[in-house]
Amino acid sequence: MINCDLGMSKPFDIEIERLTGQPTYSEAGLSVSARQRGTFFLETFGCQMNDHDSEKVAGLLLSRGYQQVETPEAASMILYNTCSIREKAAQKVFSRLGEYREKQSEGKVIGVLGCVAQQEGEDIFKRAPWVSLVCGSASYSKLPEMLAQLEAGNPRVTGLDTDTDDTFETEVTRRDNPWRAYLTIIEGCDKACSYCVVPFTRGPERSRASDSILREVRQLAELGYSEVQLLGQTVNSYADPTARRMRFSELLLAVADVEGIRRVRFTTSHPSDFTRDIVEAIEKEAKVCDHVHLPVQSGSTRVLRAMQRTYSREQYLEKIAVIRAAKRPIGITTDIIVGFPGETESEFEETLSLLEEVQYDGMFSFKYSPRPNTPSLSMSDSISEQEKGRRLAVLQDKQREIQAAKHASLLGEHFEVLVSGKSRRENQWTGYTTSHRMINFTSQERELLGTYVHVKVTGATPNSLVGEHAV
Ligand code: SAM
Ligand code: SF4
Image 1 (cartoon, rainbow, N blue to C red):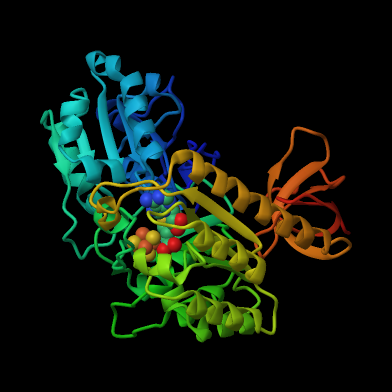
Image 2 (cartoon, rainbow, N blue to C red):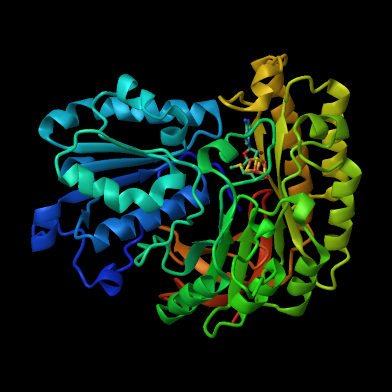
């Protein structure tokens, strides 16, 4: 799901040589082109879409002869791909930039990419004059020109357009995960939720051509990827720009049909565009994962209207009923905001009762954060931080209870797991089921990373399952 962790993503070593035909990470013995072009360090804040944008930015730089390094100290260019969805996220970027103030005097180029770049624009140069590059996510397709300007010695370069029909496609994407490949199929957002910066920072909705998506999926399968996650802020609003006019549900099936692909995920779905044919695709094709992330934001129709979410509580519940009626059980997760301006105690309780009614398999929850350029900024943010914190804690307690009971009911069941991590503790592995439950399990096998295994559930916590490899 598109989550909003602010952590820095740590790259796996995926042998980039396979993708670019160039060596990487060898700071001692840089290739000739890297010595000419330089090296870059890229840190990412925010959601999976930002992670994936960074993978594409890294691919683009590598294909132009830059070399990726693991520390800012080793880099000639330091890039931050930023998130501004909540105030704290944006603040974090400026404190990080402050840490690298001295680096400019060492001749390093410092660049800000992503949502904070789009939101703050040239003001970044005033707050952090040591920055040379400011590029919003809707302008990434212009990055090559911007890099050329930097190379020509231009001290300040910006890319801040949002009025583009382009999607950001690259010849080379430097993917961080060797098994699950992210693939953006729709960029930007045409919804206008009153609290959200995304339509401003990522620009209008642009869908990628279905033939180009399928071509990339075939390449991914050839490279050994078996799981593909289709991304978009409203992934199910996908509108194929080609004459083929492939529906989103058809695209899911077409991706699943590519030889070598075993799992197809998609996130985030918008409730208003969530149609029955998506459930039918999941029913029909086992490779389309049995998981839907369907953010509700609030259980109160009045608050939903104030949020401009374009559906009522009842309409949302009708979508849930369609998903629950599927022949194959489908996991449902959600996002919720507490303390939206004017949210009363009884409206908050409607959100609690919605949790009770839907019985979500997982939830991301946030305190409302007023953001620049959003309509809700003009509404009085009447609920104190303390009260928002209390509501968040009550909500999370409720969801923890629901998940604990759900997970306990799975004891003894068997699941197929894609193994994605190995613990430092001996014989301990971790991975995800098709419905995106995390499971930590024991196995005596020496190497399981990237393989699919069957695991029997032997224990449960509210956030994950515990199991053992069933041979
Ligand atoms: N497009 C997705 C959708 O419609 O649900 C959401 C994308 S946003 C990156 C992820 C989540 O951040 C949202 O679902 C919402 O819960 C939360 N969020 C967005 N703006 C927020 C704000 N101003 N304050 C608090 N949470 C916010
Ligand atoms: Fe933001 Fe709403 Fe668009 Fe999601 S659908 S990205 S919450 S405006």
